[in-house]
Image (cartoon, rainbow over all chains, first blue to last red; front, side, top):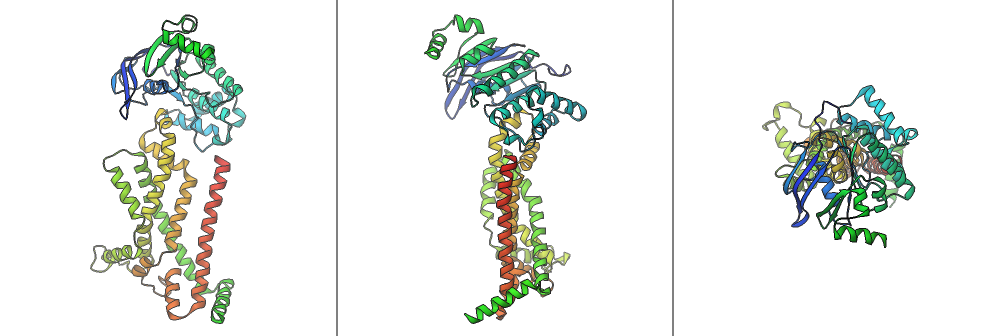
Amino acid sequence: MADAMVASGLPIVCAGIGVGHNGARLLHGIELTVERGACTLILGANGSGKSTLLRVLHGLAAPSGGTIAWGGSAHRPAGQAMVFQRAVLLRRSAAANIRYALDLAGVRGSEADARIDDALTEVGLRALAARSARVLSGGEQQRLALARAWALRPEVLFLDEPTASLDPKASRAVEAIVRGIHARGTTIVMTTHNLAQAKRLATDVVFLQEGRLVEQSPADEFFNAPRTVEAAAFLEGERL
Amino acid sequence: MNAFSESLSLAAGLVAHLDAKLSGIVLLSLRVSLTATALAALVGLPIGAAIAVGRFPGRHALTIVLNSMMGLPPVVVGLVVYLLLSRAGPLGTFGILFTPTAMIVAQTILITPIIAALSRQVVADAWSEYREQLTSLGATTPSAALTLILDTRFALATVLLAGFGRAIAEVGAVMIVGGNIDGVTRVMTTTIALETSKGDLPLALALGIVLIAIVLIVNAVAQYLREWARTRYG
């Protein structure tokens, strides 16, 4: 979890968020709250605005309308981490990639060593600590990206379709790590278009369609009794 | 044809026996061009990285100017440096005209835009890949630029080799500011020009052989470095 001295960035509250790019409206009037401890899955078809919303929530993209507040502040807080669809790793060893992130966060010395060891053990890459990160397999790279994020002890972890380019075995490994991180109290916000994965991980579901938030519900409710016609149609379509 | 064969044979002999005059000229050429490359790297790499990562007014115009300066005519650079360093010039008090230092200055000016422009492209490509991740991790712009320079070090090493290749093969600027003084500022290219005009083909050919060998070695090293880095670091 984030250091107790660091101001909390939760809840994340979006009020009327809109995002435009080159004349196109990517998000419209998003009203959304991410509560502490949730594992929120953002669902929707390709192009529905999932990744854009995730970037707004993480502070990587600025909304063109509406407001966003992290724990009541308009400034993006420390204590967040993000894992992207394709792991972005530096041309250095697996351990050095984590050390780089910790260094930026001001964590150095024996504390950094301990966190690197713990994070690599957590994702099953301890034996590959000295291996160059970019020659690891796709699944290993994504696990390393998760280890780097986890080493920061984030209050909130954002994941943008982290298993989209992985085979089923590697996907399950990533899911297990995400579950483990969530079990330690980290709030998770993740995009996916994989319903089965959403069912396995989600405590809450946000469903987007064409840049609009159509439904936000507890996961059980969303999958068993969706409130909106659009969500029901999406679930039905996925079942076909 | 016989004269050519004879000159080539004599040239090969000079190279094979490490002729003292030939060695002196080659070593001076390497000293001037390597120093110029190092200085150009110190200036050009940060400029390239800053333009690639920074967001400031005039950035695009600066990129265009930098790219254009890659084609600076060496004789014009030589002329400008000559005017700056001549006795009546603003830097005349340093008294470095017709010295290897003046040649280093000219070559540095000539290749700095090359190194800056090529490194800007290398770092910009990396930035488009890393930008979101580094921003997510909280990297500041200077810190991101430094990270990208380190991460693209092998591609940038190739850029430096390209700069060195341009410097060591250049003749116009060093001829003007060095004066081609025997034993003092005579480098490979200026010697080739002079000896050819005098009809001393063996020495000119010997230097030509060394120059081509250096260029070949530089390119081979660049190629090997790229392939090794791809295998080792991905």
